[in-house]
Length: 335
Image (cartoon, rainbow, N blue to C red; front, side):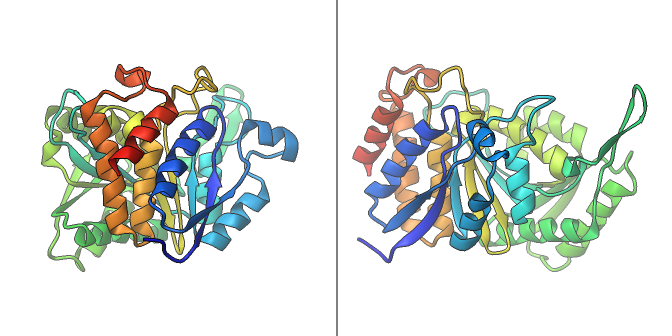
């Protein structure tokens, strides 16, 4: 049923970004929800044109529309331009990174029944980018942990748990070594927990978490952590359910949300029409639910997972022979 039009900022990115984005918006459009797209340029080629990977008009659009769907953007290792993802999160104040890791029926992995939510603080920690050369051969990086950001991300995690029927929040840390910074993070989590007596609260050292996750990931529910730990652990969790190609993500701040595929831009297969659009499609599912289209989001989610479970119209990375658009056609048929 058609609904009132809603404008969404669309950032296809580069590499395979435009291909998986096209496949995704075809499925969303098939739901006939009145969503209209505002396409925006971002990425390496844009940097040549504008002098930056994320031109100012991209930020203006997201601030105006409140919601964006974003494909992958290339980030060079070592030199080159600053990560577009980090830039977007910082400039828009998207302090919460939400990464669900859910086992997909029909997708064979080492683990079954994984159902984890990684909640990652998105704006500070070592990702503050405060580095300098002390003397030649010695570089210092500053880890920034603040009370304000720690309280905000802890509150987000507990509120998410309560709203979504989750039973436990586990704060991840290394406070045995970084007693002040990670100690502050834990102190803030404990303060927030007092307002959520219905949610079980635990704490775990990050290296122990890694061991426990690969032993039995089903013992965890919502994982709350700082920026760097969140970056690493969310990828570890992705590996448990089939990889970054099937893992959705959201970056959320006050009144703003950017939903994105967190995998790379895969320039080696760009333009060949064989990229797997699952991660961006499931991110779009999160976007639909965020916009209040809960029922339609569930329909799209069931359709995507149904195609993956059947395994007959999947892309080469999943041992299939379907093209990106053929995958999207199969999803639309299941709607």
